[in-house]
Image (cartoon, rainbow, N blue to C red):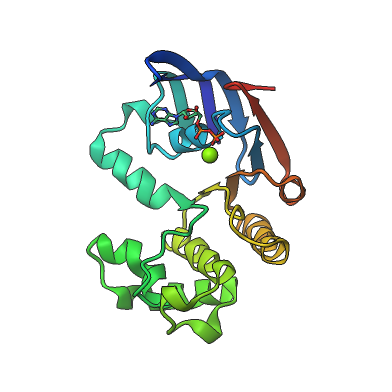
Length: 220
Ligand SMILES: Nc1ncnc2c1ncn2[C@@H]1O[C@H](COP(=O)(O)OP(=O)(O)O)[C@@H](O)[C@H]1O
Ligand SMILES: [Mg+2]
């Protein structure tokens, strides 16, 4: 379970101190597929990054499966980001001159492990995201939809319990968007991975189980 308690995040914007997140209290149960919505600038990405320990709140606590993120040391924080959560971004963030397979195992290779040991896992993920026919293709030669499939497989390489996705379909047409949303829904339902996505798309909210709407840094 993910709990955010009394979360404030303050940034200095144009010389003024602004509460970008202003007393956020949410609970997300295991197996939920939550969509965080709200106008541009309402604090959606900021909240997602806090849940992923990519940034820390100004005050308040985030507790994931009983662990207070603020109490983790650097090593634990790094492990949390690499193993317990998987990140998916709007612009995929693939290495363009690596192949599909190489991109998918990159997190474990960067972690000092041999790609060979992850061959079976990688095969399973390539099948899950439906990229068998392009597995030797370089990232640069893939369509946006294919690149996002690679990014989703890469996010799953360490069997995270949680996927955090920041506008995963923000750069895709409606057909590709529906395909990616169906894939995320399948991962949520069949693998039981908790998903928190930030989205602007009304249709995409329907693939999830709950909407959390932000307005001016508050849950409405
Ligand atoms: N690192 C930062 N430093 C200063 N201001 C920031 C930073 N990150 C985000 N902001 C500001 O916080 C507000 C919310 O940003 P963000 O969470 O990215 O909104 P959203 O994802 O809902 O569009 C915006 O006004 C943005 O400019
Ligand atoms: Mg954003």
